Length: 178
Image 1 (tube, rainbow, N blue to C red):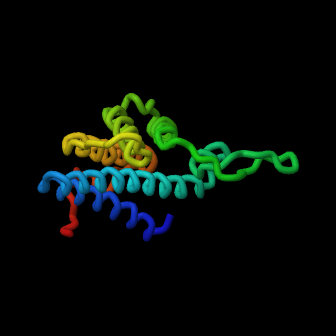
Image 2: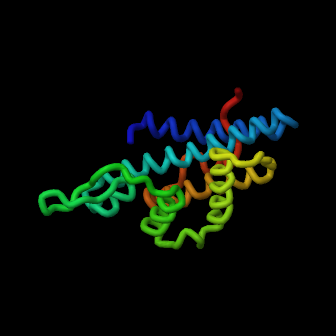
């Protein structure tokens, strides 16, 4: 992944944190809008980071076909008697996270303190993306979901790169001022 793409992933996470800060200072419809934005952009940041990690890992010389299929969200096929990467095959976000956690950290995803909150956040995000009913978000819930994203990214970075996520120590504090 390029440094430009890495910077974009970090920027998305910072934007989500800023929307959360703005939501904490607002009320009513304005707060709702900021919380929606924080949640959606937060999960976009998570997916962007995962895609960057996947690109990095799949380009390593010791990366095998099965790992690459999961990392790059591709099917596996046999072509002329040889296993190859095939068409797009989308994996659930929680499955990709679970794979990275188990494979590179050596722990089941459920053993991480952030797993339950992240899973709850995914359900709420999915309810917002595919609404059937009105979604009411609480500031405390969105804070919990973003904290889980930050913690998950840090643990995955520690497992894969042997160093933490660059913005982990800032927690939910944004560097943006919009």
